[in-house]
Amino acid sequence: MSVYVGNLSYEVTEDSLSAVFAEYGSVKRIQLPTDRETGRMRGFGFVEMGTDAEETSAIEALDGAEWMGRDLKVNKAKPKEDRGSFGGNRGSYGARNRY
Image (cartoon, rainbow, N blue to C red; front, side, top):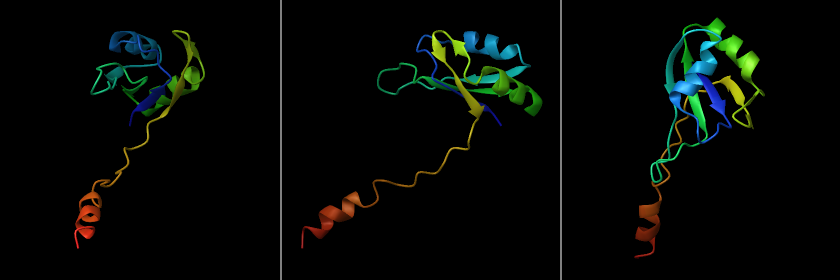
């Protein structure tokens, strides 16, 4: 399981985020997604900690805390939902208009 960290500054780095969470336990991994087109940080990230107790401690301490001029949103990350296929009907719409 990992921790979702939202409302991050676009200036944040993996090292700086790791340093903040390291105060609450061992940080196993940091992910900072970037925009595919611009390469710019998307304003959120994920932190994987060593134990559930460390994650809980970090969430309780950091949710709502101000860091780098922003109030952090920190909670347990939810599993990525399968959004399904949006493009499935696009082809058939055009096909219906041909007849």
